[in-house]
Every structure is written in C-alpha cells, then in structure tokens.
Image (tube, rainbow over all chains, first blue to last red; front, side, top):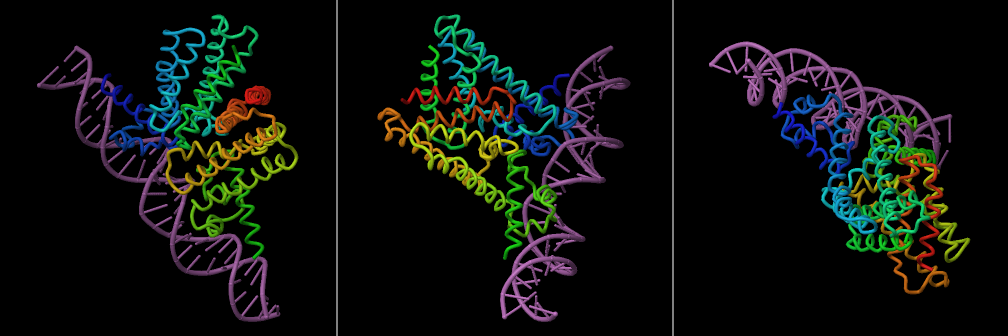
Length: 193
Length: 193
DNA sequence: GCATAAATAGTACGATCGTTCTATTATTCT
DNA sequence: AGAATAATAGAACGATCGTACTATTTATGC
C-alpha cells in the first residue's frame, strides 16, 4: 500500500517537471517512464490512460500552486499587501518550475482540444480568476481599494500582467522581466486605490 | 513554375490555420497532407524538412500579421489613435484565426525547445516588442504621451493586456473578453498621458 | 505536339505513440 | 515463513511520426 503510492507520487512530480518544460501533451508514457526509471508498462499500470495521468499532473500542480502561492499570502497579510505577496509567490512559482508555469502552457495546448483535460484546465483557471477577484474584494473591505471597483476587471488586469511576465521571462529571456512586472503591479494597484 | 507555388502557398495557409488551432508542433506532415488533399510525399517534396515547413508557416503568419495589424494603423492614424487601431486590428487578428494567435501558442510550445524554430519565434517577438515601443515613442512625439515615459514598459503593459485577452477569449470563452481588454487599454493609455 | 522538367504519388524505413496482455518479481499480511 | 497481493517488466498490437527513395503523372517551353 506504500511503495506503490510513493512511486506514483514520484512519477507525477517528474511528469510535472517535464510538463513545465516541454508541455503536458509532450509528456509521453515512454519519456516519462525512462525519466522515472520504470518500464512503460510498469508506469502505465499506475494510471489506466494517458488522460488520467495528465489530469493528475495538473491536480498536483494545482495543489502545489495553492499551497505555495495563495495560502501563505492569505495567512500573513491583508489588503494590498496580501496582493503583493500573492504576486511575489506567483512569480516565484513560475521561476521554480524548470520551464515556467505549467498552466500557461496547458491553456495554449488545450485551447482547441476538447476533452476532459481541457475541461479540467478551464475549471482550474476559472477558480483562480475567482480567487483573484476575492483578493480584490478583500482589499476593498480593507479600505485599500475604492469601493466601486470592478473586481473582475482587476482579475483580468492582474492575470494579464503575469502572462506578460511569463512571456518575458520564459520565452524571451529578457533580464528586466521582474522589474517590468513590478512596475506594472504598482501602477495597477494605484489604479484601483 | 506556377502550379507548384500555388500549391505551396495553399499548404502554408492550411498549415497556419491548423497551427492556430492545435499548435505548430501538432501540424504533422500526414495531417497537413490529408487536409491539403495531397499525399505525404507530395507535400514533403515542397519542403525538405518539417523545420522548414514550420518556419515558413511562421513567416506567412508574420506577413499577414504585419499587413493586417500594423501597416493599416500606421497609414491611417497617429499618436494614441494609432495605438487604438493597432490594438483593434490585433484583436481582430486573434479572432480571425480559427484557434487564436499562432504566436502565443508558438511561444509556449518552443519555450524550452531549442532550435531554429524557437530562434525564429523569439526574433519575431522581439521585433514586435520593438514595434510597440516605436508606437509609444510616436505617441510621445505626437504630444499624446508624457515625454518621460518608459517605452519598454509600455510595450510590456500592452503586450500583457493582449495576452490576457487571448486567454479570456480563446481558452476560457469569457464573453466579456473584449470589454475587459478595452477597459485595460484605456486605463493604460491614461497612465502614459 | 513533344521533349523536358516539375509536381505528385507510392512504398518502405526505423522510431515512437498509447494500450493490452501475460509473466515475473517485490511487498504486505497473517 | 508462506500465502496472497501489489508492483513492475516484457513483448506485442496497430497507428502514426519524419524522412528517403523510386515511379508516375502533370504542366511547361520550344
């Protein structure tokens, strides 16, 4: 009951690493098995289909993301400061994964590929947008933001800013990605104050 | 000298369509041949490698993008109005391609896949960022923007906003993507005035 | 209209894909 | 320790990948 679960978890962790680098769809059973030191069939037995493997990788990513980005910020700060912490953790999440945010990649990969994986990605992203809206609302309640702001617009603005960071950092290797995003964030916060 | 070129161009156009929907890496020789009504080898003879095909698809996309997004705006307006037109054309470009911006997909696909294709994508994106900076400088020269603005920051902000649009529109199917981006744009323009 | 050249089809290659099946090891429980 | 069970390996499947080679068809230039 123990050994198998350990292996399974190790597979998912390795798979997440690969997915962040080469994309979820490119995490092939053979590749992942070799990387995990297992045979194809040995690995495959843990999941009954590639789809299940992909979704479990995304679930693991979601757990790590929530635990490392959102939860610490919710515990340690409120209002605008909480938002700043979320963003700092968000950027760190992006830099800790070898190949950048796995969700950003997954969004592009499954844009037009219907199925359970796409549905899962969309649901995750919608949830995250809702979390961003709650952050804005919390800043309103805290008195940091004006009370007449559009929290959905805030979620859009903030998410977009991080997508820009992802592009600058992971694709274009621009050394000023952090500064650019920091500037954008402060301007954004000012706009809602 | 004529028939072959026509076929070649038709292949590239079909390939661009497919790339926008399923990603450039998923435009397979077999798929593209079937979609184009050719045999695998018949299609393959036009290019000597898949890499060449991919780059030519990106080149075609770049030509269409420049001709439909940038050039008309440069001809018909100046300053802030020119920027507004670029953005409108940019959004239209995204909506006219069946599966959304092919460059956004390519960026995520080739993030960590070294080679000629990646180099080409990076160069294209750098060029586009430079164009955005020139737009900002032109708005400064026009008196629409303050003279002390950071044009590179403007390029970041504007590009990020469009990435948000791409996410909302093509992945999440959110009906307010256009409004969100329009709001973000006006706020962005205000910030630089 | 015919020779020449260009364009396309056909076939085959080794590799890898996801998946299934049956064997063979390791681990766990009593 | 031995029986029961879980975990892994091995081999094979049809399909498809990119690529190479040789035929055959189609268009072009005189």
